[in-house]
Structures are given as C-alpha cells and as structure tokens.
Length: 87
Image 1 (cartoon, one colour):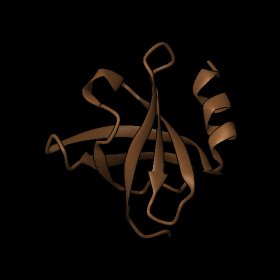
Image 2: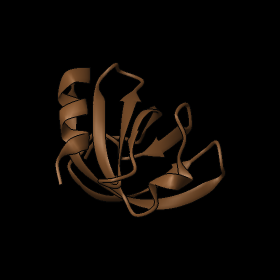
Image 3: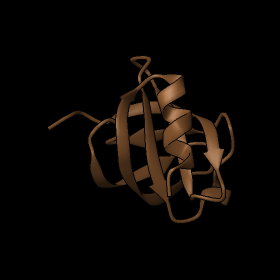
C-alpha cells in the first residue's frame, strides 16, 4: 500500500466535481470530490493521493476531512487538465 502524502490543489473543475493535486513527488492526481467548492487553489491536502480508488483525505488548510475518489494518478499537467473535463 502506498504511504500517505501531501499535495497542493492546482486546478478545480466545479462542473465535474474534480480537483487536480500536485504531489510532493511532482506527479499530479485527479480526484472526484463531493463538494469541490470546499477547496481552493493552493490548499494543502494529505492522504492516499496517488492510489486509484476511494479514500478519506484531510484538507490541512481548512482542517476538514473529505471523501475523495482518485480517478487518475501520475499525470502530467496536460493529462490532468483533460481528466478534469471528463464526466
């Protein structure tokens, strides 16, 4: 199992309910979030951010926990932006 990591929100798709997160290792993950309005660019989050599937993540900026479903991991910026638009 992958260890929990930190990441920074770099893109948000309100229409699709997804966020893109740049991880400490430089990769980008895209995840479904029930309420993406709770996130802003620059928020720091912590959890299983690089493994496909559903996990609880912690938004360190707002001190709140959310359920996220990682749809794509190990993305570059172009791939992440494409993933943000998929419904």
